[in-house]
Each structure stands twice: as C-alpha cells, then as structure tokens.
Amino acid sequence: MTRHDDTTRLNHMLDYSREAVEMAAGKQREHLDTDRQFSLAITRLVEIIGEAAARVTAEEQQRHPSIPWAEVVFA
Image 1: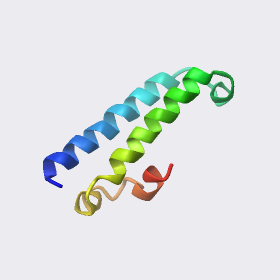
Image 2: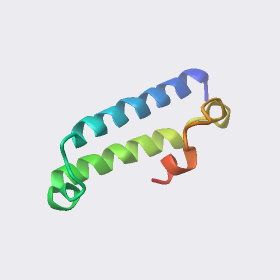
Image 3: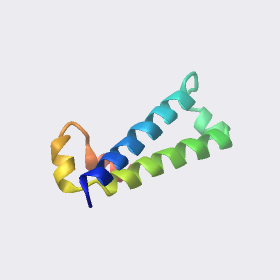
Image 4: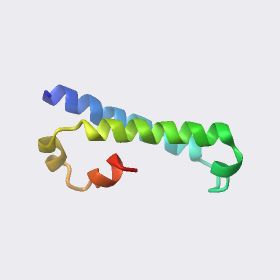
C-alpha cells in the first residue's frame, strides 16, 4: 500500500467521524434504541471508519500513536 492510500484512508476516517458527530448532535443514547434510521446510519459510519482503519499500514499507524487502532478496528 502506498502512502497515498494511507492518506486517503485517514481522510475517510476523519470525514466519516465528523459526519457521525454531526449526526449525533443533540441526540441522546436512547435514540440509538428508538430511531432505527439514526441507529443504522451511525452503525454504518462506524463500520466504514473501522474498515478504513484496518487497512492503514502498520508504519502509518505507528506515526499516529494517539489513535487506539485496535479499538477503532474492532469497534
């Protein structure tokens, strides 16, 4: 995998994380149980973030030690 691919994946992680945060603004935990569309959307965004994180090279992960990679991948 090239550095460019890692950059793309990191950007996807950031973009989808921001989207999830925006979508969750003003919501409470119970909305995940009562709003199926919201629950499915948040679940899918988290899946995309995890899939992108799983494909970031070990070298790039080492450059970003503050990211809990194992937790992100297996969320």
